[in-house]
Length: 400
Image (tube, rainbow, N blue to C red; front, side, top):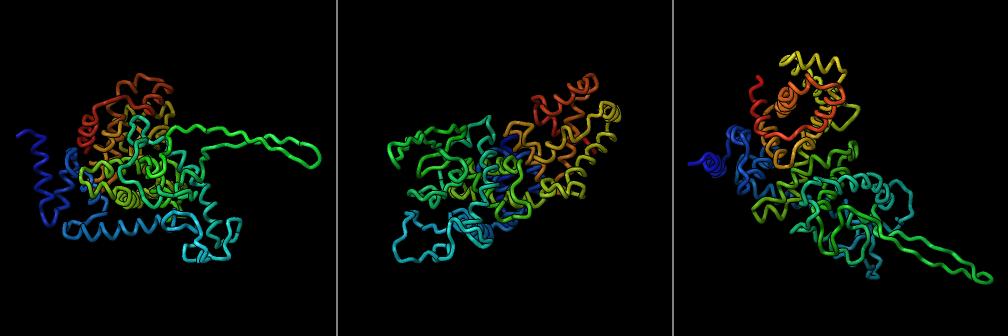
């Protein structure tokens, strides 16, 4: 039996159990999940705490969470006064309150309890989300492609503006006008329309691209976590998770990839939220503390490189801030990132192994770093050269 088939057999036997041994799952996943069946999607759901160890509990958990997420879409994404079927018309009964907007509310209201005021205020952070998701994983076309399972209550807007989030902040048509006076009190307006350019184009009515789904996930997360909100870089964290869920060979799981991704992303963010909150930079789980751990490990493993970088005043924040903050999602191709995250998610101490990977990345480039000047080392570490990711991971495992 080949090594690959043996690895597949390990996961098949593991997931065939009624109660899955989490320690065994961690051991198997740490060495990499085979890219077959639903192994990676299930492993990540369990390691991130979305699913429990009892298989019998999965259907109820998934049904409950997926229904809850659909409720989030209705309450947080659809515009005030929306109609559930998307026809956008008042049926004349005046029952606006039943559709989520009070009779005293108005699109121009600035009241603190106004649903419309909140709707327009949300556009401030939505604009940043829109910019970020449109450039997600540009090396692959996946996020630009249409999803097989678009959100029906969003994509079938039937002319109701605002259901699709990108419509709120990225106008597809820019209008200008030339005003000419004709005679006494007569004004002629000539409209001029120009199309605005978009890199990641939105889909037509009834469809949506994967990046639009990711945009909705981040928007809902920001709405539910107002103390943190959206911070640039979160798009790079949610991207790989969504890719795994949306690529699940299991049809039912793929159908609910958006909801499953949201809860896995939320669970991961609960662990790394300190990375994204500036006031917590100096906390035990903050980004400065993590960079300090990397610096101390490098000093213990290779004082020569440590002293050389210190003499060049090439501080860890120049290169490792992004490494740690984004869990190396920007340093390697997506398939390698998935492999790295298999090991990182499997680590009971979670980010201890991430620090070892970062340290190994520096140690592997030892000769080049010792020969380079400051500028060359900055370029090397900020644009890490192509490498077999297994070489890096094997080196990281060797660090005691």
